[in-house]
Amino acid sequence: MPESRLLCVGGLVAALMAGAPTTTESAVVAFSGGDFDGWQTWNWDAITHLGFWSMPDADVVAQARKNSVRIFQDADLPDKEDWTDEKKRKDFAKKKAEQVSSNNLDGVFFDYEGNGLTTKQKEAYGYLAANVTEALAPYNATIFICVGGRPSYEFRDYPYDQLADASEFLFIMGYDMHFWDDYTCVLKGTCSPAEAPIKDIQLGVNEYTAKVDPDKLVLGLPWYGQRYEDILGVPVNYGQIDYKDVLALMNEPGKVVEKKMDEDSLSWRIKCDGVCSLDTKKDHGNVVYFDDASTLASKYEIARKAKLHGVGMWKADDLPLPNATGDDPNKKEREAMWAAIAAWDNSSSTMGR
Image 1: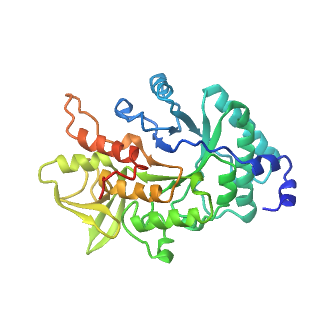
Image 2: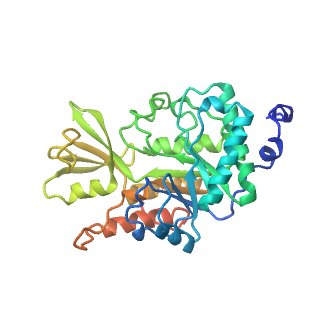
Image 3: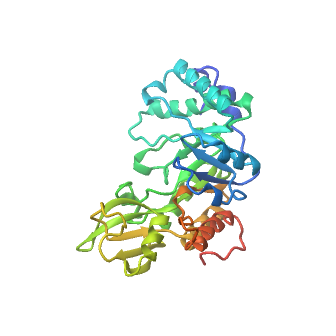
């Protein structure tokens, strides 16, 4: 971007030109949906960044601090109509500095997933990131920014190079990639019922690294699947299912009648006797596509080969836990999920091969 163009927004040149720091240590980003379910079983040695919306309780924070895990809260972005107003951007940035200071955070993250931004709004999104980065610098805090699985996901085409320069890294949301969420797969020839088809993941990484330094990119993958009703061979979407609930189905005698690898997406496909749910309120969805440690390891390997800054997941709360009686029937599967993400940059790892 020409310097003369940056000058017109006032005060942003230094922040945009200098950018936000990237640590030399690789990143493993864990998100919590808010309940921090089973946090005692998480692999805290593997995690470097913990992202959340609601502040965790003191025990979780203490565990994060004990393991030098940096904690980041959602920035709760202002309305997109305000992004082009420099004063409103700076006021927002000041509030983020107060948020970081009052909650003793290591930073905030942007999670804007809207479509239809104007050219000026897209440009202003980069300025907003730079304003917040500048405001957080005195607190030794940073931001990272969540982006779609491909640059053109739902035709967003945000200014990724500018966003990367103004943040610690971009978190590629390599999930919600199935046709029912991202119709642009039709143009790419990557459409699949799976949550994270390997062709789409590879294409997304290739396209981002053509625009952004790989060391400014983190690849996030799903720890959940999607349910479908198979109607005359056509899958009709019925929403997400947590990995722990997939395992519960497979633990139920006679519930899962077929399990096979979908080679096109490198994801598992199971078919149930009746609805793929133990919730009696759900009356549709007899097929599930999901990933486990073996398939995710192959997809994390894409990040390793591309020399990305790190990997992550949505979300740590989705893993199976010991039951009320203390039995832990899926301990092996839970530990395998953590092992796969912990070994993402280990070229000698044989998981998923």
